[in-house]
Image (tube, rainbow, N blue to C red; front, side, top):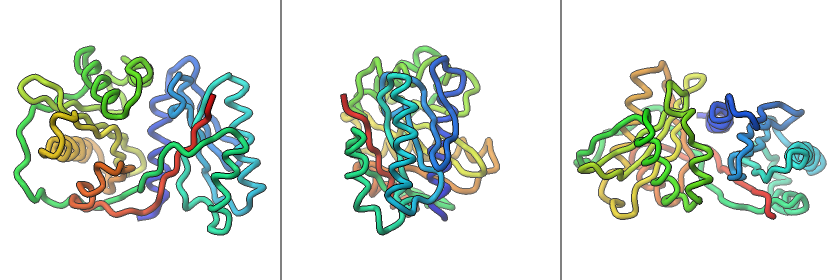
Length: 261
């Protein structure tokens, strides 16, 4: 599967979260897309290259356009980039170019894809999985996300607010064990591709199968409701082995550069 499936779904996930927000910005510049929620958490004020970058001058031009946009709105921001958009000869110059514009490497993750999911190799734990559709489930989703992704709860709750609970294309799930929230997952489906996001497990319940169980639940729910045939995600180091066991293969590398104060 092409890396474009990962890049396109990632960009779409930001677009659907931005929809309807008063400070949001979703627009296209030559060679770079903006999908910004206008929130405190800079990772969700995002720019994405949307076409191949062949020269350092072209890279600088695109990053400058994004920086000017966010500076005009006094927003910290992040560049999310699939490495395959960058010509091999200038990849080693990417960090230096970003540094001149105040962007520092925050994370790098394999972008992974699968056309079918393998059957589980172990018995998964039982839990009750609920779609986020109420203040309680939304609060549980945000609290777990804040803990697992090391983000202030106020920032996380500003991104995942009441908009995501009612027939929203960013479909969020929380898994419960004896009433306690233990795992989360979310999906965005577009152009025949299911994107997996916000997969997290409470630190007290890790390495026991809860992350795999809720990931499979989210995939199955999306497959029932759509005509999608392919599944993509961006993996953390904690989840990489799990996703490989499930049948995902790396197709690109995602680099995230964020602005600093």
